[in-house]
Image (cartoon, rainbow, N blue to C red):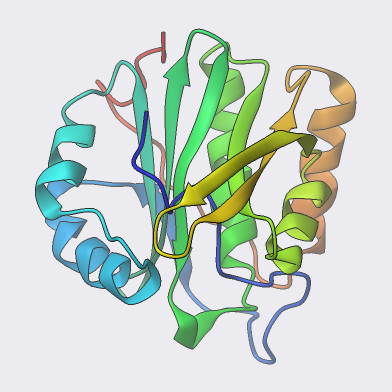
Length: 204
């Protein structure tokens, strides 16, 4: 499992920044060349940041991991990770640069990540979010996540509890329609680069 302090976005993503249309943001598979930017953003957004080595180790497991970056002019402005488990998928980490929050970046990352989960045969995805982070919880609810329990003292920086959230039945038409509706509401078109092998390999 992933270390604590992850699996939540700091982005209150209900709206988008003025001028977001045509912002040039692209969602792409995370590659080693992105790690300098990923690690810098990780250090800026997490109290207990992952190391570059940890990210490299994650990228070496494409059969059970799927990592994305959001790029703006080739600069990393967000990232999201998915891990396959026996019970389904687990969003391991999600972060967005504070300079570009409210630009719909977390929504774009989740759209691509959840669709990738379905492609790989996953029908349920879970994540943890700080119990006090209501904006992030609302974002996840838009994507069909619902509370499923509490992890006491999960966040080691302040021993805050984590709310466990699940999204089930990802393969049903209702969930596909939900994602299509979220994408249609984006002010800037979703641009996602297709993964190549072995990234496309099933997460099992």
